[in-house]
Length: 349
Image (cartoon, rainbow, N blue to C red; front, side, top):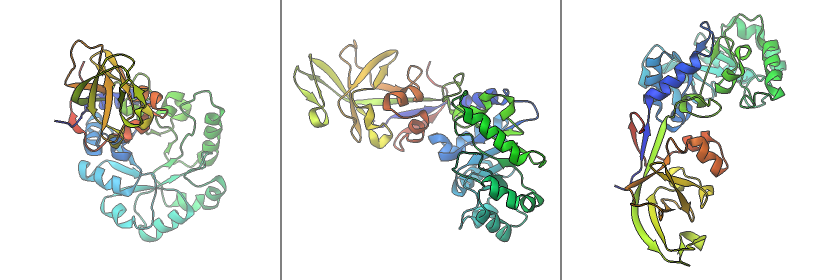
C-alpha cells in the first residue's frame, strides 16, 4: 500500500491533560481545546478520550466544529465556541447546546435577541487585538452583559510561550482591571499560560497544544507517529539528479528511496533537501524537492532498506520538524493530510 500510517496515542493525550490539570489548584477547572479537528488528530476520538480523563468543558473555533464534538460526546459537557455567535449560527447554537464566547457588541445584540436565556460567555481583548470586546466597549456594556449571567469571561495571551515577555504581565493587569469583582468565572490561560504560574490560572484553563505533545509543554508525552511507505528504490550514479528542477545531484553512487507523501499530505516544500526521515534510530536525509505526493530519501548508509521510513517519531517531534521547515508545530499537526491511515493506539518504542 502507498498510504502512510499516522498513529495517534489517545492515552498520551489524556495523560498530558492530567499533567496540565495537576499544575493548577483543585478549584481551577481544566478545559480542553479540540478545535481544528483536535489539531488534526480527530476531534471525536480525542474528545472522548479527554472526557474519560475528566475534561468537562471543551473549546472549538466555530459552531460547525462544536456540533461535531456534541455529536461525539452527547449531552453534558459544555462546548464553547471561540468565534462567538456569527450570523447564521443561531440554529446550531440552539440545537447542539453550544456556548458562544461573544466577541463584540454586535454579537451580544444578536445573541440576546435570538437566543435569550441560552448560555454564553464573553471574550475580552486584553491587548492581543484579535478577538474580544475592547476595554471601552466592555465598560459600556458590562452592566447589561453581567446581568444576563455569562458563564465565563475570557481573554487570550499573545506571548505566553515567552515567559519573560512583558506582554504577559501587561495582559494580566488589563484582564484583572476588566474582570475583578464581577463574580464570574474567568479564563486567561492556554498551555503557555498554565506554565506561567498560578497568577494566570483564575477559575479555568484551556490547554491546547500541550495536550498534543507540543511546546511549550516540554514534559508532554509524544502523541503522534507518522510512518511513510517506500514505493521504489533505485541506484543513482554520480552526477545524476533527483526530483524536480535537478535541485539535488548525487556526489557518489547513492541508494534513493522514493517515499509516499508530499505537500498534499502536509509536508511543507521548505523541507526540501533539509529534513531527515528515520529508519529506527538512524536518520536518512531527504534529498531533492518535496513534491505533491512523493519525497526522495538517501538510504545509502542503511544495510537494508525498510518498507517504511518515519518522519514523526520519538526521534523527531512535530516541533523538531517544524524547526526544520521554518514554521511551528501547530502548523505541522493541523496540516496532516487526509490520505493518512489514522490508527489509534500506543506509539512504537
